[in-house]
Amino acid sequence: MSASRAEVVAYPETVENALAEICGLLKGPYRISPRAVGLLLLQDDAEIQNLVREREGLPVYQRITGVVKRCKETLHEPIDYAVVTARQKRIGAIIAAAVTETAPASATFADRLSRLMMNPWTGIPLLLLVLYFGLYKFVGGFGAGTVVDFLESAVFDAHIIPWVNNLVDAHVPWASVRELLAHEYGVITLGLRYAIAIVLPLVGTFFFAFAIIEDTGYLPRLAMLIDRVFKKIGLSGRAVIPMTLGFGCDTMATLVSRILETRRERIIATLLLALAIPCSAQLGVIMALLAGRPAAVLMWAGVVALVFMLVGWLAAQILPDQRPIFYMEVPPLRAPRLTNVMIKTYTRMRLYFVEILPLFILASVLIWLGQITGLFTALVNALEPVVQIIGLPKEAAVAFLFGFFRRDYGAAGLYDLHTAGRFDGVQLLVAATTLTLFVPCIAQFIVALKERGAKIAFAMFFFVLIFAFGVGYILNAALRSLGVTL
Amino acid sequence: MRCDFCGAVFDETEAQQACTGCPLAGACRKLKCPRCGYEVLPEPNWVKAVKFWGGKILAGRKSTART
Image 1 (tube, rainbow over the protein chains, first blue to last red):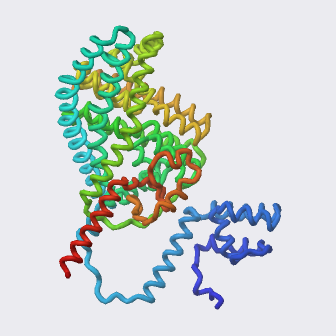
Image 2 (cartoon, chains in turn brown, blue):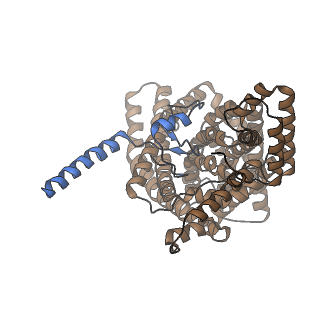
Image 3 (cartoon, rainbow over the protein chains, first blue to last red):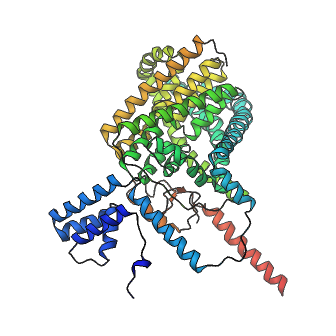
């Protein structure tokens, strides 16, 4: 049975005209209709482009690409979007003609809540509530305030560290090996303590809160909510996926950014991940640093959000325009299941711990080697004036040096200084903000190098490095000159 | 297995296809949704075992109660 005109989807006039022109140019044999081939060409399907180039020859193919280009320029929305919405309209019409609803189904609580989550007027306050209770109260308050305090003070400081130090001092005759295992930068007293007493409880509480958010189906609603905002910075709601995963691990999120449709989106997402998305451990430590100082948390979030939007917007202006599109079917909202949440938290913590423990130990060994060779002291000395320029005590240079190796390691270093009482409120805010914006860790840099190329990866690295300290400097100068105390 | 982001239901074979081209494919131990690209955590083996044996025991009890 041949499809009559009434049965096919009617696309916008510009698309139909382009389709007619392309169909007139296509002469070669295809397994699908010329109209279907034309639609795929209009949607930049790489496979069909190659096939048409091969079957029709280069001159005809170039005329077709000219038609596609003109269509894109004339149409006020992306072709993909126009095609999908026209198809949805047709599907809606077919369903309306074929299905009879006996009684309108009343909206359930979940339906109403789902709509509220996606409406900007109600969705943003709901998002702030999620962040306040999920991050600030649970991770910053419970994770940092209760669990870390207990593990650090009652377990490590009171028992493990003195015992290790005494044991090593009593049985190891070589001073350099004693330094490797214990004391200030030892594998056990620093690497293991950072991993178990500081980072793990913080990421654990973060993963628990995140698993609840995931299990409810809130993430796709968040994507729909911020799609409009993301469009301003050259991204679409789809970018919520790498951005959200970035709160887990920026390195993995940089890899995931390949799901974004355009090269421009991928570059912007990689830059924003490197600059303004703190990873889980970093976020946990920052919440711990700023716990009990709500004004500082608000300012930190405000500055990071401003940087995210400003840099994203500037990047979108600089990079050539390829408008992103985003549409998705939103799955139903559901109550989280405790077993799901516990299993996800456990799995994430296990994967994370297996990954970080060797790295933290390696970092301690590298620091030990650096101390023996004098390289560590030289690098710290070189960084000291920079951290002093942004108003931080010179000891913070060590934390930033750690941050080069791994962001969470650096954040844990800052937490150490904070517990030693080395920061006032303004310094805490400046340190947290600068470290959030600070250069990505080595792993993320390597992935960016592979995914985006050396030129872009190095340009991003130096931009982020200068920008982070620049923002730290401005923030410190502004707060000091205004006499703000936090 | 259900994607935590888009709700798509898929099995591990489909997830492996979605990892094509990734330098960490097979090493990161996560599964990628073939529809949206979101990373889904695999169920640990001990959880699968608990579910399997738990299901068997429950099913056995139900059939005993019926008879």
